[in-house]
Amino acid sequence: MAALIFSTLLLLVLVTAVVIGSTARGDEGGDALTTGFTRVLMTETRFVVQRPYNVPLDERYEFAGGVRRMWVYSTDKPFNRTLPGAARTETKINKEYSSGVWQFEGEVYVPAGTSGACVMQIFGAAPEPQETTLMLHVYDGSLTFYHDLHRVLAENIYDRWIRLNVIHDVAARNVTVFVNGEVRLRSGGHGGPGALHYFKFGVYKQSHHHPSYLMESRWRNVSLFTKP
Image (tube, rainbow, N blue to C red):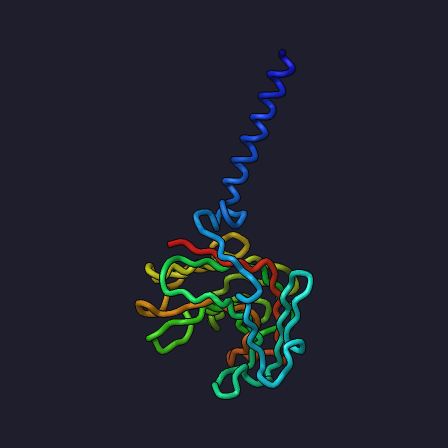
């Protein structure tokens, strides 16, 4: 009898530990940052690659082993022959939104030497003159808010995986960026009522601080979450 009681108590302890652990990790994304959010179904059709219009996809993009590798050269053409823009190989998450709270999550790896590139952005800010609500750039191994070298979110990011979580609260007009689970940026949002937004990641050449000839970033475990 004593052995049976002990076994029952041990089972209850184990079940309780599992429940508590699951709650601490969050309901949807396996982490407290995504608790209360709902995971968006991400089929491959959600990932739309934009690359130089005159180059085959496999010469600027690779998806293997769960890693999306994107690279571009500073002399490349834009992704659209009729629209101006700098060289890029970016993946657009094909899920536009104009309300609610949205969270992007992904792990990024930037090879040494890449500089002067945007590696992640929230597109959309109409009717404001700028086109984006957020851009994260890389300059000489530092992750920065746009091209502001005084607003560094992370240093020494070359040749290692870092995790990014970006939360955009449309109604509150704010954006919060987490690097490896820690808040590294709080910024105001952009765009009027009904403005459309979406997330992008990859490499997009910038005109500031001497961009490198070759720019590359690699991404894995990219997810999207939302809540009202």
